[in-house]
Amino acid sequence: MVEVTCAIFFGKSPKFFTSPENSNIGPLIAMNSLTKLLPSITSAVATRSSRPIISACFHSSVTARQAASTADQQPAWTPQSQRVGVIARKKGMSTFWDEWGARMPTTILQLEDVQVLDVRTEEKHGYTALQVGCTNKKNVTKPVAIHYSKLNVEPKQSVAEFRVTDDALLPVGTILNAAHFVPGQYVDVTAPSIGKGFAGVMKRWNFAGLPASHGVSLAHRSAGSTGQRKWPSKVFKGKKMAGRMGGKSVTVQSLKVLKIDTELNLVYVKGCVPGFDDQFVKIKDAVKKHGAKRFPSDTLPPPFPTVKDADLQAMPRELIANSGEGKDPFTTKE
Image (cartoon, rainbow, N blue to C red):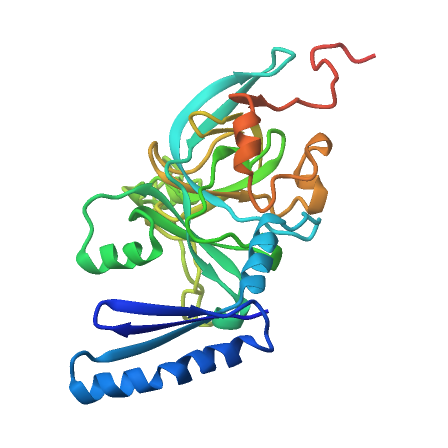
């Protein structure tokens, strides 16, 4: 069904003609309306009293309803689905006790104003991905401000791109919360490691160094020989030598999510995470845990493509994961 609306402007006085929602007679009624007004338009042009401007707007009401219904029906999660990741800030490390009283080191990550900024599609870009930004930024250049104003989102301090499957795409402006992850699932965390500056081989590569005595003078921490004899008469590429240490992207895989704070958007993960405090880190579902093994059995299916606002409002503030298989870790083994 096509609904045709024609507007004819005489100065500041528009006249609208809307046809019924019928694909057969809609355009005919619109053309008949324009035909009836042709004498008025001709006289207006002849007298130059006003310049008529004719504009026609054709839109499909049924198509709009179908698009709205499709947006309401979110796709179902499958083991082959790949969800979008998020950008968070490392707030530091703390201690977490499970239901048995076992102590575990944990890293606290906070999501600050995380939104979807752009969509990469197979038809336009050759691959499917989502661009995500974190933490609003005030002072930006004019080109950057115009770019974000077109997206109708605030400028972000950190931007990253995450590959997703076709069924996990999200519209621009979607807010990603900590409840995007579920307690007990496994995630991969990527961040630049802490820079150590120029370091020697003993610190950088854990070399043993040269003897402390017996003929060694002023070379106790040196690398030793780096080459061969006449053949191949060179140092092979990739030789472990002194140089800059740290400051490179490091990924820690299969970290368990211990706790979710839905009010403060905090994600508690077990173990340590690369980077210094307040560093931007990327979190995504673990790649080495395939399909349903990434998530606890009682949380399947996970929030997909992300958590809904209605479900988020109904959640408690703290979501805590169960540790182990329900067995007391302090019991003695028989």
